[in-house]
Amino acid sequence: MRSLAGALLIIGQGALAAPLFEDRSAALPKHIYGGDWEHFVGGGVAVFDCNADGLPDVFAAGGSNPASLMVNGGSFTFRLAPLPAMTGVTGAYPIDVDADGHMDLFVLRVGANKILKGGPDCTFDDATSLWGLPQDDAWSTAFTAWWEQGDDRPTFAIGNYVDRNDPDGPFEACDDNAILRPIGKGYAAAPLTPGFCPLSILAAEDARRRNALRLSNDRHYYVEGGYEQMWDIAERRFLTEDDGWPTVALWGMGIASRDLTGDGRDEVMLTSMGDQVLQIAQADGSYTAAPYEMGTYAQRPHTGGDGRPSTGWHAEFGDIDNDGLADLLITKGNVDQMPGMATRDPNNLLMQMSDGSFDEVADAAGLATMERSRGASLADFDGDGRLDVVVVNRRAPMELYRNVTEGTGNWLRVDLKQHGGNRNAIGARITVETENGLQSVQQVIGGGHAGGQLLPRHFGLGMANRATVTVEWPDGTQSSAQLDAGQTYLMTKP
Image (cartoon, rainbow, N blue to C red; front, side, top):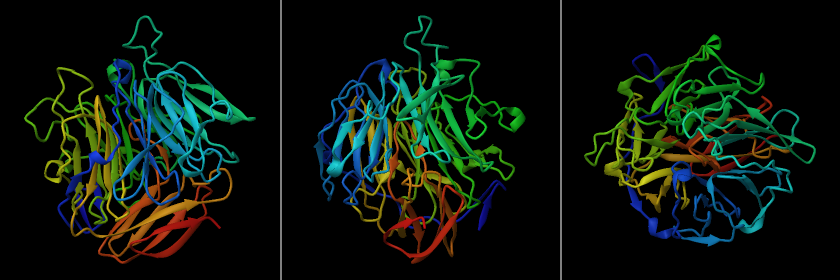
């Protein structure tokens, strides 16, 4: 095990093969995230299995165009499936609200948000009224969810962008955010203020090992007086500098969270205009910015000849070559035509090396397109054990790439199930141990940029053929199993 600048202790055995992707975008039905200034942001994608065939399906926000549901038919074929008619959609997140085993969708919109109730064979019905979701006219751009102790239904946090009704806007006119808690047969909304225009929210265990909301806020619209926020879920308050939470201002876009050091604390990636900021979790519960030498700042385009700063959107960790080290996808793209920012701004694929540094490979791997990318997801769309890539672009067709990297390592996937309302064990932590070290992933809903996935969690194992998998369930109890590589396992809480 080796360290980088004394800041990061890394597990794994290093890259096994040079990543390579094959463009399969033609397999997707035509879909474009469109619209004017209200859809400069958003463009999220939700990835989940809506017909229990083991293949990930795709819901894509459409902005001023209709949202689309694309059902995976295998071998990189997709068909459009019926949906309740919806425009104004900025993003969506899969979540089993009623614990019936069919994935539902929380849909973010410019205007009233919706919940779609999933049924057999990728059918969906509008359950917004049935489940008592409060309605308003906010411009929603961020979402996360969790189950509080004793609740059979989830609690939602909604991040709202600019208040479109403020006559002095859009600058310094960020709307209030909201917490929606189950009450009776519906939900009661409470304001989460102050709001600083979040483009991503994530409910997860933080470096203090406490459950908290991380809000990534867009400085472009709060201008001054705003900052990044952390909200303690149990104490229902924002952390301050007295809690060791420093005041940091970013043009915050997306959040990715994963334990990169094997210590059971998640590092946090924050995308932004200019620097992409990776924060390393410390034993005292604080965070330290990653050293520049790690290669994660990705502040300017790496190809295309445009030297202006980049604009980062969706961020997601995943093991592209299955070497046991989490890699990082970041989508990039100018908001529209901001002259101070790069307009030729390719996406990043940062491969983690054995010393903990990250190496940019998107161009050589075939992922460095120049569209205005927004939401994305890493998922194994053909079941071959390698993570593929889907990307939503603004005013341009979606992109789909098959991972054809040769010589990748072994892998396994872990799905979770427990009794009660929190069927998918949101809030659990999965730890995978081989002779190469420890990896851990939290089971969360939220983060990314305007979209996320709820699928079995993927782990690369390198050359290991077997792993010890331990689940710390939301109630703190643990289950362990010895599992062979090359399989997807369902672990059920006793």
